[in-house]
Length: 76
Ligand SMILES: [Zn+2]
Picture 1 (cartoon, rainbow, N blue to C red):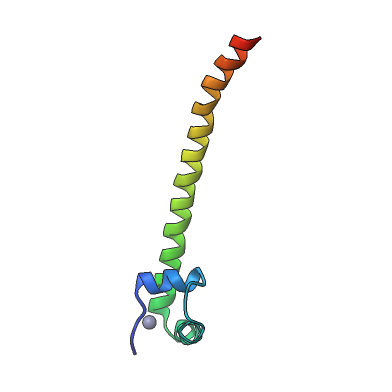
Picture 2 (cartoon, rainbow, N blue to C red):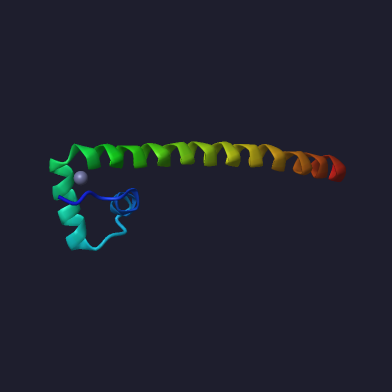
């Protein structure tokens, strides 16, 4: 039985996969705990990435406020 790679599971998760391959991948995941665990790892990596992205967005929002406040103060 061939196992799926992280890249393939990532594509499966994102729906970026040929329908037939998707179906056989889903069938494989039902039987294979190795690939299920790998899929979980891919999901967790993605959540971690999302957290980092959110933190960066928050940081950017904070640093964007500074010049805005200065501008508001300047015009008033
Ligand atoms: Zn497998």
